[in-house]
Image (cartoon, rainbow, N blue to C red):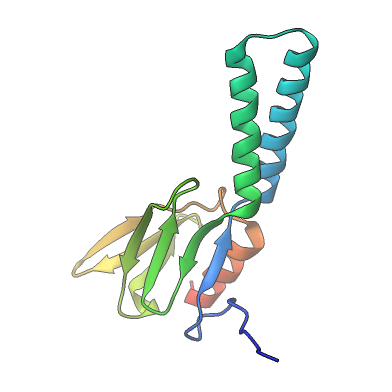
Length: 136
């Protein structure tokens, strides 16, 4: 039987950080409510569209990875589509968490560049594990 390692530490295997599940549930609830109310009241097509978009965003928040941390890079994935943004570094010492654990920066030469990820959009336990692993 083939054994596949779980991707949850910085030991050369990627750590996946998911989206905030509470936000996903809020989007799903609001989207579902919107669609049901508009179906009952014969709402406008734009109202159905906004409800459908809320449902889609909620479903994607539940199923997609927000960003992946590897031994030499952080890759931020788009919520929808194949786009990614990669931030490279030589060691975890090049990463800093500031603003009370809400912002992540990577060293680029003598400058610090903010990585476009946020704590409130991340799964709380994933974020806490990420911050603990980089030593901040």
